[in-house]
Structure formats: structure tokens, C-alpha cells
Image 1 (cartoon, rainbow, N blue to C red):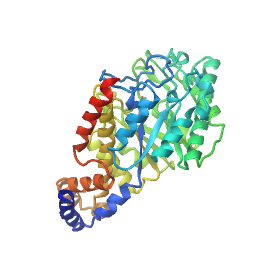
Image 2 (cartoon, helix red, strand yellow):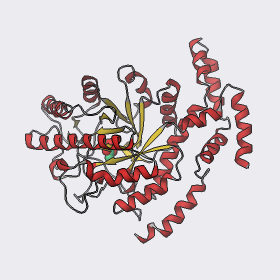
Image 3 (spheres, rainbow, N blue to C red):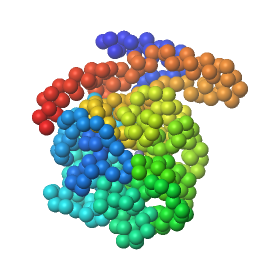
Image 4 (tube, rainbow, N blue to C red):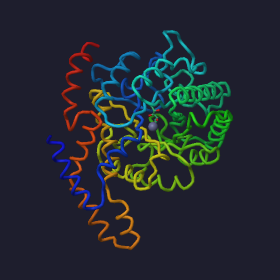
Length: 416
Ligand code: RNT
Ligand code: ZN
């Protein structure tokens, strides 16, 4: 009752500035957010191929992490009931269901993901995919698709093509297009002398990967750049410029990871420029703290700015929203819940803005009113709209979800 009461007042106030909160709530239910499976087990996967490499790190040792596919499925399902909205699950190749038999990365097939597809069908999730070009013997020296050795490059080319076929199969089976994100860790710890050659090899590998045209209606490919990684501090082969060029040359999408730029550079400012030249983008919403640390996404200014860029422009069909964080120092289900709820929250926050009114003020040069309204909006009763959204999605309101996570931790995770 309290939720309804507060909502009625909020709805009236927002209506007075031309915002229809009911419509905002309904709209948000149509925007998918892709949640990364790898938060559930610290990017380990179930291939048993050794430690996490590639210059990324999940720090912390909170007990209870998922040790196998069933546990990961159980945990994600639990989290999904605490997160409002339309969800996709993003899988990495190392999460394959190999039935206990070692399958080489270049030999993975759609059938290795059939149990995930069944799970997605049962629970109404879409699926996304990622080739895993790290945590492997063939990536030990920090190079994969740009490796000087053709045999190494070929191995990863095969892996990426196999991954694209798996994603297509997922899209076809679910009737929900998958998005495949391609990221490789390639880089140099120390100053290289021939960046051009390394980048030329990377380009050549991608040309081979995308020579297979694929089924556009079932899978969208995207490529992710980076500025540096641990052990690759001096040069990242797949830099922003490299992938911008590649995406426009090959007509594929670009991925923007919020942790992959210089600290004062923001992804929110990149979306509008890129959408003038590309049909679609993929976001990896993360939270870099001093470096690409992949902290859990919080409801901060940059998250709100990213959501506003999407909503103000009406770009929700062109910007595929994916999350990419992994924190092993807190309850992993809580991490998923906090990060994904915040993404949803930021989108809703953007949806209850009188954008047209603000755009008009800007066009007229009334920057005084633009700033005044933007600031006053911050103390509008947004929380009441958020609570109502959660309620109408059948997920806990406010921090009610926390007790459920704690209870699950005691009953399930503690026994692992
Ligand atoms: C690494 C990239 C990449 C990974 C995931 C696990 O810096 O952000 O997206 O985080 O593929
Ligand atoms: Zn990423």
C-alpha cells in the first residue's frame, strides 16, 4: 500500500512537468540488459584450463562461489529474481557444458551450449556470447590473434568462428538475437618496436574471422578495445582506434567498456558520435576504480549519463547494454543484484526526465533553465517510481532483497 501511495504522489508531480511515469515503467520492461555469467565464479569457467590470465583480475575470496554449471545456473536464477526487467545472460566459451570431456577451444560446438539454451528457454532469458581468448596455454605469452606464429593465430581464428556459430545457434533457438563480443588480451608489457606489424596481424585475423558472414538476424558481432592490461602496460594491440577502424571497415559493432579508457575519458560522451557512423553498439558497463578494476556498478553520475544518452536519443534498440564486472570480495549474487539493479535504476531515472523540454531549452539557448531543471529533477520523488517498477516486475523493493541473499548464503552457499 505504501508503495502505491508514494507512487501516486510521484506520478502527479512528474506529470506536472510532462512526464508519464506509467509509460516510463512499461518502456523499461522492453529494454534488455545483458548480465555477465562470469560474476558468478570469478571468470573461472568450467573447462579447468588453469588460472585467469589476459591481464584481468577478480580479487577477493568470498566463500560460496559456483563450482559447476548447476551451481552457476542456480545462483544466476536466484539473482534474476531480484533484478527487475528483461534479461539476457552473457556466456563465455569457457562455460561450455562438455559433459566432463575436454574439448579444445577451436573445437567447441553449438551442442556444448544446449543445456544453457534449455535453461534460457525455461526462464525467459536471451543469451549472448564471448569467445574466450585468455586463460589458455595458447595465450600464455600475451598474444593470440596477433601472434607472430600463424599456428597460434589460426587456433584463435577457429575459436572465434566457432563462437560466432554458437551464438547464431543460440539466437536461432531462442528467437532472440545474440550478441557476440570479441575481446583479446594481446599486448606488450614493454615498449614494442613494431606496433604496426602486430596490428596488421590482428587485422588479418579478424578479416578471416569475419569472412564467415553468418546469420545477421541471429547474431550481432561486436569488438572491444582496451587501453592497457596487467602485463600489457606499454601497448595494447587492439586499441580504440584499431577497433573503431575495424568496426567501420567490416560493418560490425563496436563495444565500449567503461573501464577501457583513460580515467577522465567517459563512455557517455562517445555514444552519440559513434552512432552517427555505426548502426549499433555494445556496452560493457563496469566501474573502474583507478584502473580497469571491474568493480560492481554503482548508481553514480557516469552510469546515469550513459543511461541518459541512450534514452534521450531513443537509442535503446541500437545500444546493446551489457554488464562487465567481477568482484570476488563480496557475495557474488549480491554483486550481480546490485550492479544490475543499478543499471535498471539508471535507465528508469533517464526515462522520467522531461527530455523534450530540456532539449527545447537547450536549442533556445536557455542554459539557465536547463541547469535549473536538471538540478531540481534530482530531488523529484524518483525512489517511489523505482519501487513501483520493482513491484510491478515482482522483485523485492528497496533493500528487501538483501535478507533473501543472506538467507540463501547461509542455506546454500555455506555448504559449498
Ligand atoms: C577485459 C574485457 C572483457 C572481459 C570479459 C570477461 O578487459 O573487459 O570484456 O572482462 O570478456
Ligand atoms: Zn569488457
